[in-house]
Amino acid sequence: MSYKEAQKKYAKIGVDTEKAIAALAKIPISMHCWQGDDVGGFESVGGASNGIQTTGDYPGKATTPEQLMADIKFAMDLIPGKHRVNLHACYGIHTGKVVDRDKLGPEQFKPWVDWAKKNGYGLDFNPTFFSHRNVVDGLTLSSPDPKIRAFWVKHGIQCLKIAEYFAKELKSPCAINFWAPDGYKDEPSDRLGPRQRMADSLDKIFKTKYDKKMVVPTFESKLFGIGVESYTVGSHEFVMGYAQSRKILALLDMGHFHISENVADKISSFLMFFGKVAFHISRPVRWDSDHVIRQNDDLRAAAQEIVKMGPENFIIALDYFDASICRVAAWVLGMRNMQKELLKAMLVPNAQLKALQDAGEFTAQLVLQEEYKNYPFEAVWDEFCARMGVPAGEEWFKTVQKYEKDVLLKR
Ligand code: RNT
Ligand code: ZN
Image 1 (tube, rainbow, N blue to C red):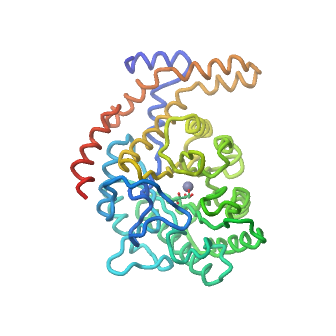
Image 2: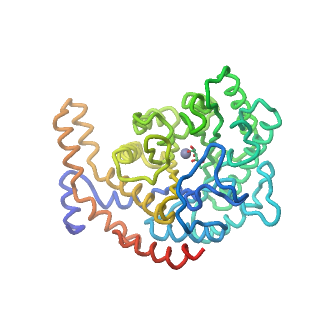
Image 3: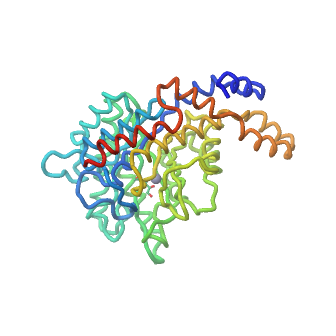
């Protein structure tokens, strides 16, 4: 079906495809640098540890800043629209001796800023509370050892400075996400103490002066991790309470809940009480496995809520890392899948369906929700990609395969 025919078909149900295309072009997605090297970073060759793990050993991963930048740029060029890059503190660029986390500053991130400027990307940021010797007994900000807490507090403060540097240099607010792996493998005797200590550490971090318009702290909750099965300090309730009371944003990661929970259902409540919602788009398979996102029901449901609540009220960041497949393809596929689901959600006559719900017309609601799934979305997507100057269909993969052969596999 041609775009013109699809446009007419959608118009009949009150959907303006031109509006949808224009709206989608304005949604920036924060693409995570860490898919490019299995959350490795540039501090050591040890790889991800202390609360983060990747599986797979697909060849060709980026091991230097130049390689990672080249791979991100290659992926970005196959993704329609203008987007952001999400960096972690462990991706600082060190000349000579590695500067420890408590002493990091803008200096280690200047090459990233220069590169982002050149390519027109916004930058977001994350302190790295893992893959480090000062994660002691699995604890950072909640450690009973005041020296360990002080180290991580200093890290958080330095990261706020780096986020402010990004925002000012790139003239675009920087979201900085706090996630700490702290927790216990087995039943702790004290559940309160670690939470009090974590709150106190965070308060010390956020006491630093930072530009509240340009730096947007978010705080990510988690149910459990491998090795931290019985207790997570930054649980959902802890994060909600902390963020709400300190007037920062809470962040929802799709992999950080019980597997049967509907994460999309949480969005409207978050929006009501926080005004804005930060999101890690991920795909858990039986656990927080961080698989590449697919066009599945969970992603569809999240995208529908984002569209209905107003995409401008969201910080959409991807968070997955699959080391068993081509990492560049994983980026392109995930970014495009997110955009496809956002577009699909925009091509649904939401006002009409809402009216059916309010009128108690549940049969019609169900029938139409299903029928609309088969509308000619693809024609609109193809048109969007053509206007954005990127391949619409699977041809993008051929380009990645060539890059893989010519560049990645030669590393
Ligand atoms: C871990 C969290 C966190 C990390 C990134 C690398 O479970 O999801 O967001 O994935 O900070
Ligand atoms: Zn996450």
